[in-house]
Every structure is written in structure tokens, then in C-alpha cells.
Amino acid sequence: ICILFVAHVPPPWTGQGVIHQLLLQGEYSDVTLVHLPMSFSKDSSSQGKISLHKIAALVKLVVRTYRARFQRGIRFLYFSPGGPTPSAVIRDCIYLLAVRPIMRGEMLVFHSSGVAEYIQRMPPLVRAVLRSGFSHAQLAVQLSANSPADGMLIHAHETRIISNSVPDEAGAWFRRIPSDVLRILYVG
Image (cartoon, rainbow, N blue to C red; front, side, top):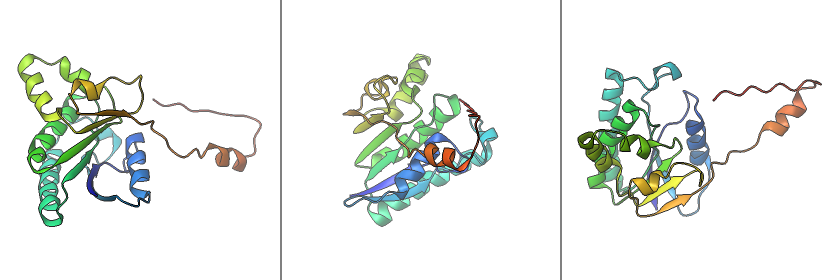
């Protein structure tokens, strides 16, 4: 199976981008991932802001998706929506509406949960348009049973819970730094 893997990878460095990079580096016996990078933000300070560069990047991504579909015959889409912010939800809705007619199936992986709840708070007309973009994916993936029920709220055919797991590098790091003081920085 060949899957069009439309996803952000670092830079800028985000948890979602790191997970995507790890997935792309994996070895799979019966699946081939063809990566189309989502490169909307050049750095973390431009995330969540609309710009002409991002509009051009969206158009380019849609064109590249059509090219991959028809030149390489890829009919399955892996897509990870951005977070519940106006610019990300609108961007993702436009992209999904543009490419859904040519894809046989799509998997939406909600690393940044709460998108469906965000859409529910919109005025009725806006909500209807946004729902049409996200609705009826073949598979929705949530990272936890405690995450917002994005899959159910977008009426995905199936929802799975797959924990967001990354290699634990902490043990190696602690061994390399001899110190009696443990300092932890949490940024969230």
C-alpha cells in the first residue's frame, strides 16, 4: 500500500513534527510512505498567523497532491490536522476539501486535539463548511481516550486510539552529564 504522507517535519521543531519524522524514518514491510512536507511556518514565531507565503504554500501543496495522485497512483492520504486555531482549521479544511475527491481514503491523525470541539463553537454556516472539510474520514486517530473525541465529532467511519510514543532518550542524557543536581525544564 502506498500512502501519501502529508505532514510537517522539523524545522520548526514541534512535537507533532518530531513524531512525523520518526514515522518517516521507520521501516515497513507492506506500506510505502510518500512524504509531501507541509511547510507553512518558517519558524515558531510565524505559527498561527496567516501570510501570503502560507496561502501560496497551500496552493502548492494541493497541486503536489494532485500530481502524486495521478503520476504515482497514490490513493490513500495520511493527514495530521493542525491545532484548534482559526488559521490551521481553515487551512486544513481548504486542503481536505480540495483533495478529498481524488483520494480513495484518508486517515486523520489528531496530534493537536480539540479541532472538532473548536468547529462546534463556530456560527452555524461556518460550522457547516468546516465540518464538510473534516467529516467522514475512513480513520481518525486520537492519542488518548482522554483526548477530545475528534473522530466521533467529525463522523469518521472508525476511530482508533494510538498512544503518541517516542523513544525515551532521557536515560542516555542523564548518564552523560555528571551532576548531583537534577534540573527539569517544562515548556507547554
